[in-house]
Image (tube, helix red, strand yellow):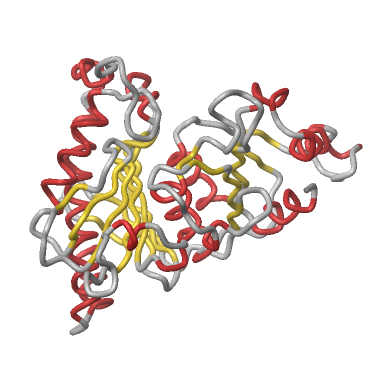
Length: 326
């Protein structure tokens, strides 16, 4: 068996920059195991599903107690690593970590927190970018760059198995936590998302709020074999992006979260830097596609740490088909 530690050691070799990335990913994975243990206690830790205060988090969403606990654990794990700063959904500003660090990490500490109390998979999403204080006096400049500058990205999914999906810019790998040994073990290497699919994931209850191109796309899917697409589609929607994403990495499909006419959804709902960027990097490394409906996600220039974006990712042919509707 190839463990995460062995894989990262081989990947990094004697390269100091790669060793820094490897240590940072290891720390995130270890923090994730502690978060997974809390999630696994379910109703026994029901206080962690309660709304914290009356104000939303920095990303504008309701904040649960476990959101904050997850962020605290990730911060603590990253302190001794090469991460200089952390950008988090739960905090308005960058969190300083290691003043000698040469990386910045962006994270959604607990994706899918609305599902905490329903025994549905939730997870942690992360993105890693290089940071050079000589070139970037303001560390925000290291974060506010197009996603193609990422050196690593991934997510942990806390479900029946605790899974790490990761990329270091050379394919996408899947590691599974082995509860007997305590290690993350390489389960799939060079993951490839099928280019074609008959499966889409979307919250269909919001279709009336979408713009016309996306409504036409869904109408054509629902028309099935008799419609212009010439095939029947299945719909799958969990509501935790990490769970929906892992399904796509496993068997293909497309994930659709468009902008719509509701207040607060005009520019999409998912965050660009710590949700869309890492997912897009993972998906492209698995030969899939990721856009905001029209534009490649990894080419978008951020203008705010908590910027929202529409997101379409998955099987490349289907992502391109959606773009054609625009």
